[in-house]
Amino acid sequence: MWDTDSGQLIHQLKGHRNYVMAVAFSPDGNGQKILSGSVDNTLRLWDTDSGQLIHTLEGHTDDVTVIAFSPDGQKILSGSVDNTLRLWDTDSGQLIHQLKGHTNYVTAIAFSPDGQKILSGSVDKTLRLWDTDSGQLFHTIRGHTNDVTAIAFSPDGQKILSGSVDKTLRLWRGVNWQEWLKEGCNQLQFHPDLVKHDKAAEACLKYAGWDDQAKAEFGERQSLSRE
Image (cartoon, rainbow, N blue to C red; front, side):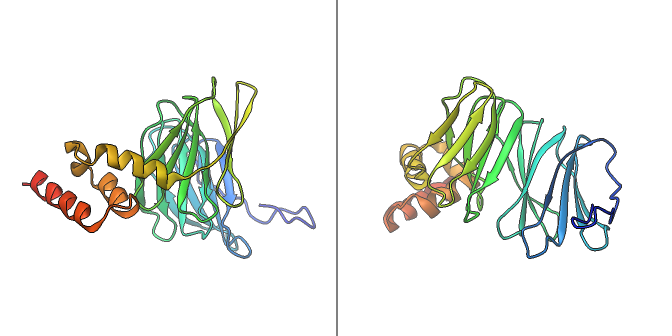
């Protein structure tokens, strides 16, 4: 870490066992924490003032390629060559969710401006939109013909921008994830696998707009599936 005005070295942060792929400051006032991701399969969280290691976040089974803090700094997101994203609690360093779905390694990640959604891009040519609270997949966005390399939300969170090895950028309009989720939940409402999948069921009960009777009947099917 370097001082911007003088160019002098402030701290040398040692601990990773292989080269570092990604770094970020936490979004609080003066960047009180530093996050790093490495080819050693770990993330490390450091104290900015002292340079001391706070947490080593272990769980990925291959290179950590991309990292991000949530807008409020309370969560950490990582993507890896192991095809997964992982969501972590900043304070404890504990894993919250493992997001599975991509079929090739993850190249780009982003939180929505309100922190409620997660976006990922991959060598599998897709973008995927996830619910932060439940870890449930909202939608798979297809159209690129080669690796997705860069992604971003618009400031209002209503549009998604992506860039690819196919030499194009694509702007995706009308990112109404609740409508996508509602449609999927309604299609799968009576499917036996939905009631058995706690995270998916939680997202449907929270966002799908079912009335009290539909929620009660779904709850009964959940109970029967656990007997």
